[in-house]
Length: 263
Image (cartoon, rainbow, N blue to C red; front, side, top):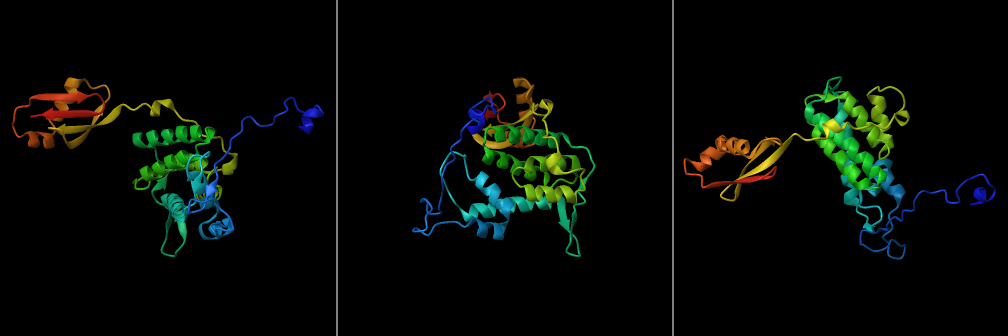
């Protein structure tokens, strides 16, 4: 306001928007206060779980504008997630030292890996803009689950993921960036962009029922006709055994979702 009055700024309001965040309550769902004895000391949490876990948990608790009760179990959950991120890229050798996991190497991403990577870039980017930090972290959890048991973990995917993780867990992401011997500083990297081609799903999982009971799940092309879907389901060995030669009265198809065979 002073700078505007002096003519140094063209606008009186320096902020683009105002966001009122919700109060963090005690674990007893009451407002924190010394008299209630439900105050959480951030220093204690940071000492036990680290600053990244404390920071991520605050963003993961729920929508920014809502009141939310504190939960040490929630902090522990986030700490486990960050530990999984570490173990995704690092392994402990026989000497008790951490080194880059053999699975992390310079290989091409599979189709499934490309899809989850670009879906994560899109989701995290949009959620940060919308201040929906909790759902951005949820998407990164999905990413880690998709990669952690892979035989080959492309280092290019990890590089992109660490840039996405950095605003949430700057210490962990910076340490892993250095351990992977990636070029430059992580804070100097360009924010990743997603490719729409990897976001367009060409397959869908359909539930298969026999007489209304779920018996199978099958992956189908989204371009398959109803006749093609029907033929694929009826030729499935498991479904064929369940039908056991009985005449099929009708086949009900809900496109891209469900097939119900009535015998």
